[in-house]
Structure formats: C-alpha cells, structure tokens
Length: 135
Image (tube, rainbow, N blue to C red; front, side, top):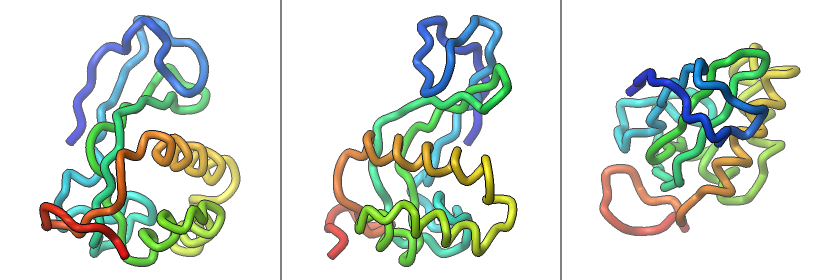
C-alpha cells in the first residue's frame, strides 16, 4: 500500500534535511500477507513477520522520502539471516538474486535494514499465526 503526502517539516529522515516540498511515499512492508514477497530479497513465499516501528528514509539525491510503516515479511532463508544478525550475508543473498542490488544500492539497502533492526519490536512471528516465536 502506498500513499503520497507532503513531508513533515521537522526533518525526521535518516539522511539530510527536508523541505515542505518533499514528497513522502508511504510503504507498508509485509502487510502480514503471504501474497506479498519477502521484504528483504523480494522472492515469493514469506513465512515470518517482524513488527517494527515506523521510520522514514530519504531517497539519495532526491527530495523524495519513503516512510516504512507496519510489519516486515521474510522468507525462511532471510528470516534466519535477520535473526542471526547477519546483514552482510543478507545483502549477498539479495545481490545473488537481483543484480541491481550491487554498489550504491547495496549500501542503501544495508542502511535501510539496519534502521529496520533498530526499530524492530520483537521476535519473528509465523505468518498468519497470532503468536509464537521463531526458534
């Protein structure tokens, strides 16, 4: 789900100041649905959901910012890497699946995921199940 709105003036962005002409695109990762791809590697078949507090990141070199709101979904391989705090391996997994994830984009993804980790609200939950933890 994506909504566009004017950015807040307070500069609540991971990179750089904002102006009131910035556009915010709100993305709701996961949306707790198995129909969405993994929010880390973009492959089908997510199995785990991670709660995370909302945050906003500016797209490099643009006045556009993206707000991430809601749960993040992970497939089995990515969930194991997230739970193991193996961000470098997660990035290499993404790069092996998507050639466009190299270089500057890879650095941005790593920054995005580290922000996600700092906003994470608890352990992974099995997708579609109200409780439980990843073992």
